[in-house]
Image 1: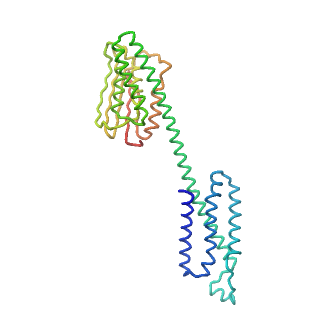
Image 2: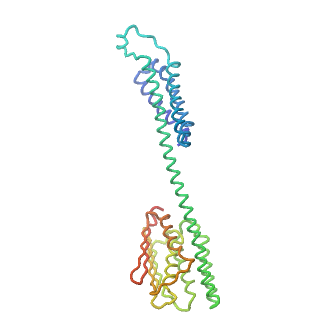
Image 3: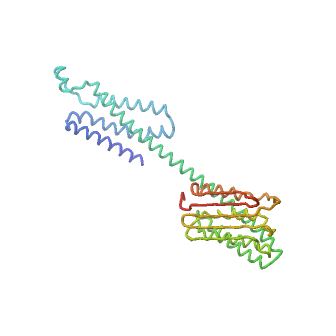
Length: 342
């Protein structure tokens, strides 16, 4: 709500209050003449509060300045209205008549004027306080969203070099072995790069495209050897229209290939299962763990931590991630509700 709208709202509110009081007084001329200046000064005080005092108080946090200024303005306004703008009243002939007629001493009248001016100012201060708190809350939410988007962009930027580094290593190994396979690998890499460069700029992509990327990644890796790697990928996409954050599943596949020692082929395996409905994305991957630990390279290591952070940002209340080891098997289970908090 803008300053002008807040001012109009409070002016109309006090206009209604004075209208009700005037009706109760049968629109008596003395009542209207007494209180019309009060209403005018109320609007002036609210204008001063909305356009000057409140910004100085809430934004600049000049508390002492605000209190002293407010007290001075209220005191001056009350005295001015009471002594200079209130029409004089002829005194009643006797005190008994004063009591019967409900006559109020001038001091009480002046106190009443000051009370109405103070109430208008306090009510305006309350409205400005609520507006300020709402604005600050919106700023906090906006800043949080900006920070999350910045972090998400940083995490996505970490994906591309990691992917490209691994893919080029695979093609480099193929170049000395088989020209035909090298050509195929370049074709797969071209499709993958097209996905990364164009599709991944969007916040969400089709799950079918994400699956095609994983398939190309596995094909590209499998071209390293003439033997068939024991990698199994099963997909059940019941709802093809379901979307997912791009490059969210591939780090699990990379991690499985890296740590399963799949090149050994014997006594190794990678099983990938993806079930997709409109309400649920169920991704599960299992890979063998070699008896002898594999030395990890210094380049890797960002995959799983990266995807955990992205899940926390994109699906904060809509995912379950389970990572565990059982005997010689490494298991990852990820369940996403794509329609919640997205």
